[in-house]
Length: 247
Image (cartoon, rainbow, N blue to C red; front, side, top):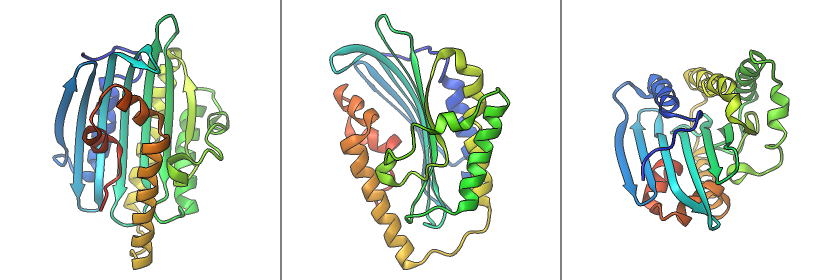
C-alpha cells in the first residue's frame, strides 16, 4: 500500500488538474477524501453545484497489485467535469502509468469532450483540438498521430466527441505530457465560459440517457474499472472518482 513514483503522472499533475478546474468551480469548491486498503490508495476531490452537476479529480495508486494475475503497479490521475446544461460538453482527462515485472512503464493518455446531449458544437470541438495541437507542435509532434487510436472505438459509450486524443507514451515523453495535460483544461475553461443555449426538456432527457450509457460502458467495457474491481477497490469509491452523476 502506498504511492508509486512514475515520472508521469505524479502528485504535481493531480494538483495542476485540480487547480485549473478550481478556476471554473471556485477555489473552495472541492471536498477531499482518501481511501486505502491492501494494495490500493485513492485520493479524491469532488465538487458540485453552480453550473456543474459534478466535477472530480483523483489519483489512484495500485502498488503490488495484479492484472489478470500478473503483478502490476499503476498510477492513475483522472478528472471529469459534468455541466448541468446538456448543451455544454463534459470533459475527461485520464493519465495512467503502469508497469509489470521486467517491462518498462507504459503511459496511457486520453482526453476528450463528452457529448451530453448526443452532439457537440463544432466550435467547441475545434477549440479543444486546436489547444492540443498547439501543445504537440511545441514539442515537434503531430496531434493527428495521437488521435488515430480514438477514432471509431466508441469511447464512453459513443459519447466521446473524438476531438481529443488517445495514445500510449513512454516515460521519456514526460515533458510533452506535462504540456498536453494543461491544454484541454485551458480550452475547456473557455468553452464553458462562452454563452450556451438554454437547456430544453429534450436536451435534459438526452443528457440523462447519455450518462446512463456512459455508466453502462464503464461497468462493462472500461479497462480501468475492470482492473480496479480485480484489486478490490469498492464500487462506491470507483463511482466517486470515475462515474458521471446518476441523477
